[in-house]
Image (cartoon, rainbow, N blue to C red):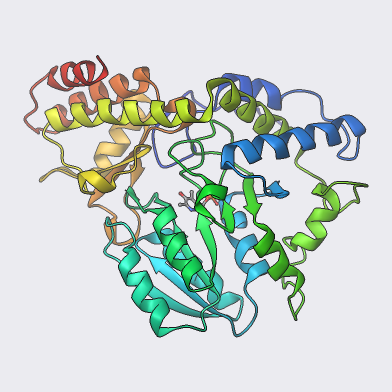
Length: 391
Ligand SMILES: *Cc1c(COP(=O)(O)O)cnc(C)c1O
């Protein structure tokens, strides 16, 4: 047999994730594999838990990474907290809200949907009106940073409404963690999950998760066993909890080395500085895109700094645009999802990838490709605008 090694091209990742992985994270992942019950490894697990508490801004004891991507974090929350027959209010303003609804149905729950237009944040007043009509609802679920549209919702305000109606909250923070403000304890969020490959500068495959005492209590009071064996937090905690560690599944050792290093990097930079960096580079990219004549899909006050949804200009084929950026510039940006396919492109500035170099490279490449596709662009204007915004 003559199979050969796979050598991926070196790309610049500016889509909705995965984002560019920090070289220190890649180096950490290539260190020697040890046993998942090795005392040294268990010590590293404790450090990961403490650093995740910092990233989430929480004291929650149940804070750990699920051994699978963000979608598994989502599923962990629903499968553990929703029992058959439970009423769950799900806020839908994009693709990931729809997935939350699907999770409720698959857990045998009843989903009450609060709908907002794609590109708009979730409206707390609508949530309040819905809860007033459904006083028996037990959980409110929403996405803080809708990566499919680039809109950001007010997690603090939504959680405050949920609490007044005695509901637990399930919050999708896959794209927000590390990139924009998220304060789990201060805002009173109950079950929050994220992903490693967006604003944490880490490779995909892990889902950081944190649960409040109230949420843990709810799981303990379940009448039926959790339908997923792999994601049953009672069992997962036998391995990740304090005290003697019992085998549940083999942890993804090297992936966890990577997450550990990514969290060390976050600590070195400090969380607030990371939020500020994401914001600063968003403003620079935005100045450049607008100077080029491009329009944002989301209104100014609701924009996510780490994910910029841009309207595809008249007469431009977005598939060709993305293909040329990839082929000619090794630059990946994201397509629109669902109803937004063909209408928007999504430019991510996440984690290690939120830097001046990526902002300027993306603007220069876009300018060249759009000009080649016969869109009139004022060459150099974008770069000048970005520099001005950075100054
Ligand atoms: C990326 C993403 C997910 C899914 O994460 P995967 O790691 O792809 O499974 C869920 N929610 C949001 C908001 C996301 O951006």
